[in-house]
Image 1 (cartoon, protein in one colour):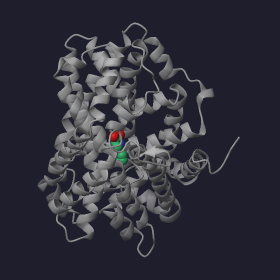
Image 2: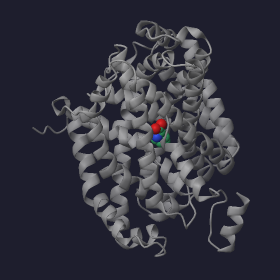
Image 3: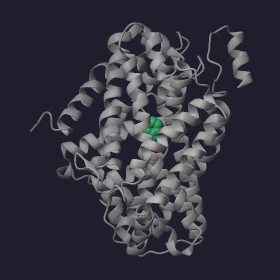
Image 4: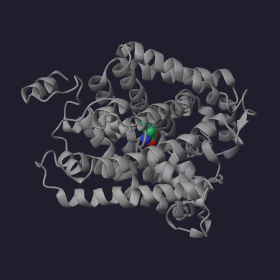
Length: 464
Ligand code: PHE
């Protein structure tokens, strides 16, 4: 941190005190936000529930045509504004209402954390469960029962969520550079490697090929407008875009950071981790007779069966859940950071106080999601439990709408000359052709796609 600050002051740029120290640090911290439960838990379960390969293809299109360009725009806004999501918009576009996009991001951070901390809590609990031999079985009914036992216990569900929030809070108080960079840097490659090992075992199970076919042989007849909306929402969620996390991280980027190149690497690596998770899970789903559409429990009931069928399975299982917990923490750090950065800039709270307030509020809101499978299972709005509702509203509404507005802001309001100057680092990068393509996609393609998919998915407009 000190090195970054002194270098920055040498070049006389007015900067915020915290900076990511190195280029690799930037990549890994951003990747730490992107890679998380979205890849390991959500991607497989949504792909399973929405028919497999055809869903995957739509997801890929959403990632390329919407996800990548919006990530670039969002990081650019953050680096220009050099502040939290709300303040950045206020600085770049004073006396307008664009800061509301940042405000909706702060709201989204709460909505996402409310259920994300619960799923992370399940992961923490599974670390403990992995030490007992009871989970080491290929019997689908046993692994399903073990999951059921955990989520139907209200106190346990609350306690694991509190533990998750406490861990995240402590890391945040330690500060941006030290806390985030150090944690994420080392462990993601290990997680990817472990997924390769699990994938190999899963692929060599008898009957595994049906899982591969499910994942890679598209059947477009299964695709619904609803599924397309879910694929779009997943792209936003997995890339951490549309709610200010990438904006806040962008605000810590150095002026010499190549934003489009970094974003491309993050998108590629995030996709690779998701595919690895899919290859680890789906062959086992078919080999052991699980239902691919099992929903949010898919990861937790299937993955133990793969470990039960490999040598040193129990060791690998502990390792897997520990690494997944770290990936989840990296993502949560960026979610909480959106709120903390906002509170530090706009209230009198210092960083520690802001973190404490945020974490406590999240525990309060989150308890509704923690209890969604027990005491509050019958409490539903729009036919959904609070867990499902918070998930639905954030991924399918808040993030896409936030991202849509960021795309419109970057291209229609801020405009090409500013866009080009900011993303070529004032002309030092020779990337004008690429920027032009990204700009035009952002200007014409991404907003229209998002709008169309949302309106049909939410059944506001009916096409065909
Ligand atoms: N991208 C993270 C994941 O895949 C979740 C996330 C969403 C993080 C939005 C920050 C903002 O787990």
